[in-house]
Image 1 (cartoon, helix red, strand yellow):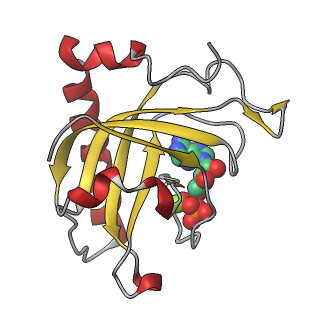
Image 2 (cartoon, rainbow, N blue to C red; image 1 turned 180 degrees about the vertical axis):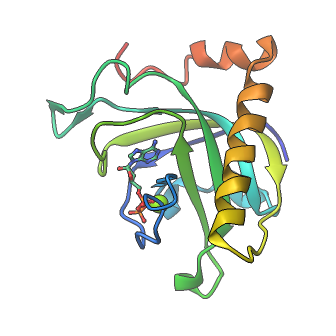
Length: 159
Ligand code: ADP
Ligand code: MG
């Protein structure tokens, strides 16, 4: 796929399929925010950077730290609700947020692919794989060619 891929939109409620139970909440982008990614047929796990706007409805609700450009892993898959005709992008940001940020604008730059979607025999196996994904993402993003995206003019809600 043609990296970098730029995505943005207001964070939506998902099915609450236990992302938080798995220690891996995923912020869902609205379907309309995915035109660029519809050229990407490869479902699975990606990595890159994301930024959440600190404000919603004119109120500042997130801290400066939470509103920084942060490393993320993204799951791209087909949405069963739309009979698998619609892609969904769910982003886990590698930061400990103090609150939810539903409704906040979020921007992301997707920089690379980690692995296809897999079927898991157990919850433990899934959790272990998510941890591996995060390590792979952080290792890749540590390269100078990727770190420069933190300063990318595409980001900067609060600049
Ligand atoms: P949903 O099905 O509604 O997406 P999740 O269990 O996946 O439910 O939780 C996602 C929500 O958790 C996000 O929309 C966001 O408001 C919040 N959240 C808190 N911390 C994070 C994080 N580190 N990364 C992504 N979302 C987070
Ligand atoms: Mg989610």
